[in-house]
Image 1 (cartoon, helix red, strand yellow):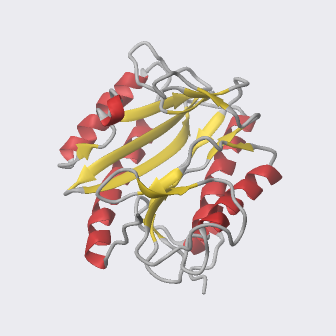
Image 2: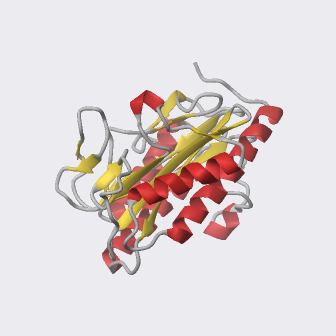
Length: 264
């Protein structure tokens, strides 16, 4: 069942999203070679609680941390460790969620560790572009298939794979609500997008094969060929027939990404 949100409820999610944006931007700025992924996890937990929020991921389905730290060929669900030390040239995906006044926010980004290769930076850039292409389709009158197709087609044109085993999702009071929001699809097919929907769109893009391998508990989901992967995610709200609001990216304007502000 898809739970539509009213203006007051979206206002609550907006506040949670703004706090999560601050958390992730701080973490991104503090990433350095030589620090451990557990250092980042502890910092994320500190920042979330300082904002009077609760980490969404900690103990969620047994996950032992407040932050997912996925390095290089790890796509998602990397578990922080003091023994996992970042090196110059790595890329790391930070996936984080929090609960503020009962409302969830979920967001992810992939960041460089020091100076990285041009091909690694290109993967990060294309992954972000795939998100915006998909998110722009999240408006009344379109379908979930339009979102997935936009992500998939852009990634394919750039020569990358799109992970199919994992998806975005609805979000609200719970971290994972209906519907699933896949990163592949057929235009015009799937659930019709409605005003009041709040969803997390999260392309997971691979340098090579899109198939995955993971631990039995679902942690450390990796590329099967050992090539790099990148992850980018925002929580958004569909409030009208116009392009959606990105709740975890305060102040964002679609025209700044080369899109028209409104998509009638």
